[in-house]
Image: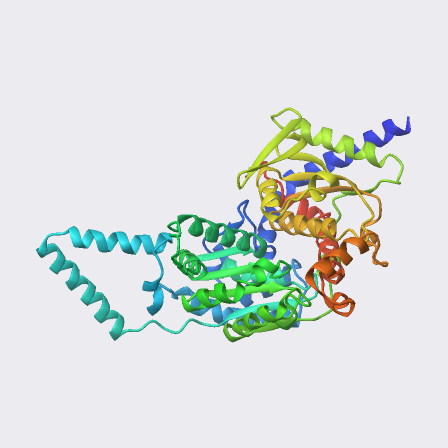
Length: 507
């Protein structure tokens, strides 16, 4: 009888949620378009500016949101928007085209798509008739004369917005991005961006001619990749700029030097100030010069109000986070899946997603609903690319059997953080069944269980015990720091506003 009552209650709650969704979707969509940037289903956004951008300025729009009660007044946020509004005016007519080509570029093989375009154009000119060649040369001289008479303006400085979790960094960047009336712009999560960079580098390396025996050739694909990206955009807005991967850390200086040389403007958000990026990471000395490059081209804005706006009083979307020890918690989650699946034009079945040539299998799905376990999502070697693909295919994900995370479970904690970052960015709705309450999901006690593995790695790297105490590879400082953001985002993901914004059934 108790189980039946719980099932009936869950159905009533779900119907209430769905009713509210249909009635108030229009209102909240307008609020969330400005407050959250209205993320699309793709990993990167290159949409046009918001409708309000042409009517009012960035700060005026922020003030109107405060007056309407959609946002709370914050002097630091408003001061940051004043600076971003100045950049917004410059970006309206800014362009980085044509991309400047470095003098030493001729020494490299033309393996990138950009260089191939230049090579193919030159070959076409050689095949033209003498009259056509003279006409082409005249056009080139006219273009060169025009460039010499009116040199391109120096690229404006970007902004690096940092501060604690929930202080409004992403909201400010989304407001700025929505207001920029320049079609050559891109908003992307930093993890997704670096995945794309590594794909481009891999593609260029595959296109290189095979090395001849006894002959050594040197080629750096990073700058051509930066040129390709600069051909596509002149403004990149990065969400959650963080460096935890040594493969990323070692190429960032060259990559961003290339982007800045090609006139790309960067606006980024991060929980860490520039000086603390990749803190205590392996071979950090090789990474430190990137910090200087970043500070040279981006002004820093610090939001340190100490307020987590995601935890402010917001109307809850009833129960979306369940603790397994609670009575009938699992039955409630089962009922929730059944009710959501009933509204799908599909049957409950496994799904296989293809990600970069690999297959990721989810054992229980129905339409845009995925019913997963923690083991499926966080104990397999999955990364940001896999979670982005899941986000593209599903608007609601149930995560069962989430354990009480210990500091020794660094890999699982890091994957859960990456998963929630990507789901939050793509507006995926999450229902969670865990062994501990949300605010105590990560146990910050002493590390256990990995000492033997860490000792072996220390010996292989030739490091001392003193060095291991500082390196994030052998501590969980980075995971604990990042998990604060995970808890903050999961808190917001339980609100009615977030649930409505993630409804793709009417889009």
